[in-house]
Amino acid sequence: MKKTIISSSDYELYKIPLPWSFLLKRKGKMLILSELEKMHPRFSGNCCFDTRFFLEKKQLVADVVVMEKARVAEYKNSGGLLYIDNGAKRNVFAERTLVFRLLTIFLLSMAGFLSL
Image (cartoon, rainbow, N blue to C red):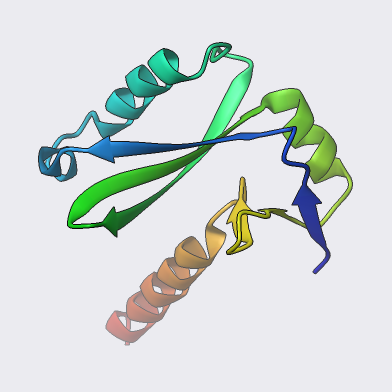
């Protein structure tokens, strides 16, 4: 597949430290949204974000990429996967359908096996 590198002027990258209780809360997305509203001056319904979680010095951290929806659509129309160049060439704003495909194959296989 074609790889499209997003220009650094089109997105903003934030690191949000999270409490460990974040893992147990159902409304974890709301915590990230409230932090983005504080940190990103133009954050609104016109923006979308992509989040990755990781550990940094025994602290849970959310690595959040914020970009306007119109710019994301322009990049997606050019085709290929979207990447930001932050040293590790991170894939962003991609549908993570591989897990769903594997789960569907597993469920169909199990249904077929159990129907015998």
